[in-house]
Length: 239
Image 1 (cartoon, rainbow, N blue to C red):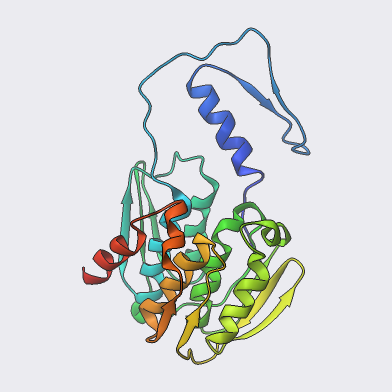
Image 2 (image 1 turned 90 degrees about the horizontal axis):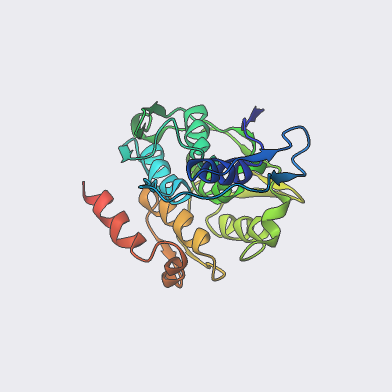
């Protein structure tokens, strides 16, 4: 099993941003239960680079992996503290080539999108679990996603929702409390419910790049985080 090598990435990211503005936070990295800030510190204004969103970038990286294409995102590189950038290592384990530069990340999919199945604990980057699940049908073997029990408490029960929609696509899915195992089967056309969850819509749209007949219902739910997502995906598809 491949393990994602992160612990509480949002705590680490928050502390890094605070530090950039002049305030030191002390993290208890032994058990990740405390976040302490010494009194008397003050924030200082400065020019600050806002990185691209690694969670939303995951869909485009997955598109490259699943179609044998190439996607480069500038401004998001090796110095990033965003945990979801670790998703590119998931794609690397599936057979994609990843280049992580100082200020960019590039993913190139294997020829014809010939991915490998993986066994992963995505506890630290659970917002990318749906992205992985959506491309798992195109892998050569089963994919197991573990450690995402808390994803059942998000916009929807994401574990159950993903299992339901993958079965509509003809996939064999075993659902567990903390995740699921997806055994690839030929993808059949289906109308995908989104459960008013932006990540359901964005992730399953990637499956539609490989398989005809995948229809995303209520696509406007992506407005929560990425209103022009489908416009950008269409631009990518045409290039």
